Length: 74
Image (cartoon, rainbow, N blue to C red):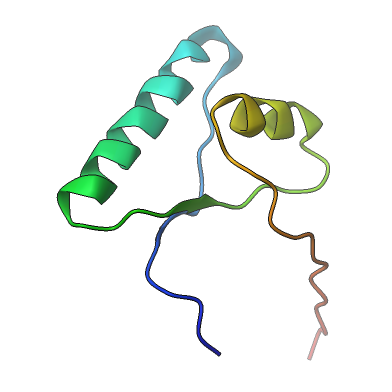
């Protein structure tokens, strides 16, 4: 499976009191990505975190897909 090269943020959690820092962290991640010649930044967000959807969309991210994760206890 080929997806191309991208940088992925696998977790971005900021306490409500410091929410303004989230945007700064995204800008820093974007700047770093460009500095290593990578022009796609991806972030994953749990389906129950609806406030996060708005944050990422307002930050210029576009929803690419939704998926479900299945576990089996062994």
